[in-house]
Image (cartoon, rainbow, N blue to C red; front, top):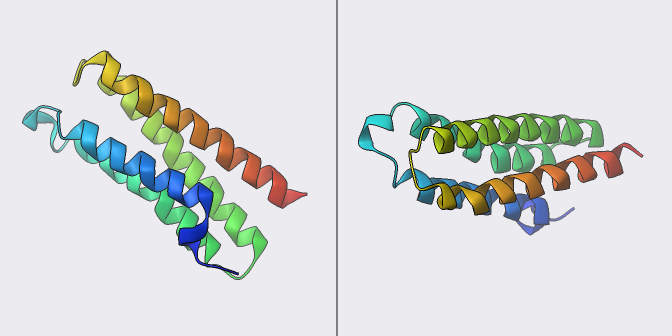
Length: 117
């Protein structure tokens, strides 16, 4: 078994996290302890849980951590939708990151389904 860093799903999670950090850098300072903090916590949780699960000893544990990552990704999606709705950044800035979140969600679900067979 190789490193979690070789896993496509982990790489995509890291990319989402980096892009979330970039977009939250444009948020007003008044949101530092609000949505900025929430978005940053949930986006980092996604690849972190993928990595932790990959390092576990059983497939069942990996699936459990993928489900946790999926939960964090859905939190992130909700936070980004709210941030867009309250205009914390230009609406067009959210288009690509929300698309990335949707794609990663599909990828995690497909991975879980494949592992459960």
